[in-house]
Length: 68
Image 1 (spheres, rainbow, N blue to C red):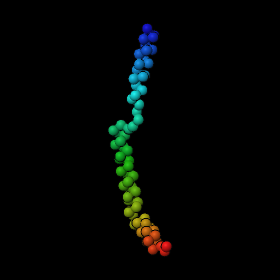
Image 2: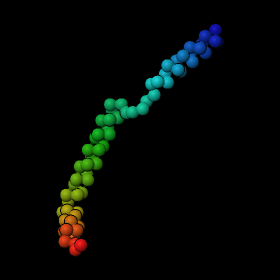
Image 3: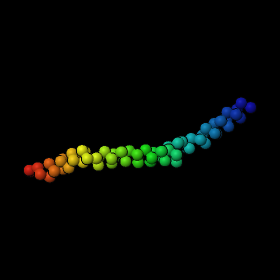
Image 4: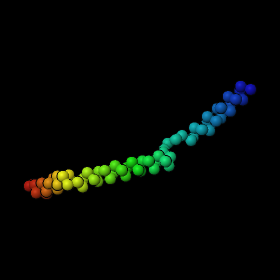
């Protein structure tokens, strides 16, 4: 009896080996996308704010007017 149970457990274990979770499920993808979009919006707001925009324009102007 114990041998049959052990053999059944071994078969289930071997059968389950090929089904390892290697990725995310749909709900995890959705949460990841929502987080990425939120971060992108925050970054966009920071980059397009007045002070940061001016600083970036100054950096580009200095780079373009540099002598070689």
